Image (cartoon, rainbow, N blue to C red; front, top):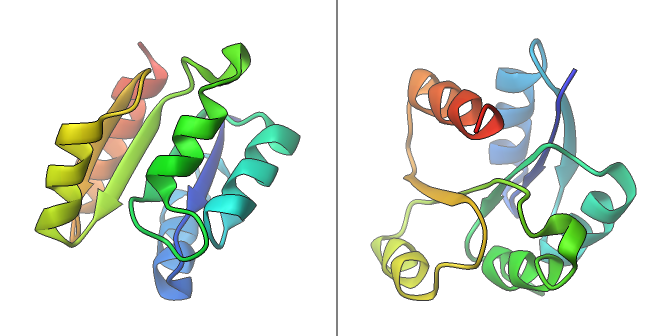
Length: 121
């Protein structure tokens, strides 16, 4: 079973994504950017889904820090956010390595299709 770390500062979003993915993937939940880094280093997931802006450390900065290590450079990441400015931030500062941006709210099929596409590259 492939592992996915889901990082979002909103508990409802974490729980929703966790329940949406749990039948097909092993899901590890992270509450912010620092928790995300810790979980990725410990769990070695196959993919990350994370919010762009989170308190403490943003998802963007967390991914940038992870990608400084060669073992995480090609780890696929799906960024998500409901704010237009976050999409603009992503487009402007897109981190190295494979990543994609999905605007909230997103449909289950869109998310699952993108996960499968990124895991099978």
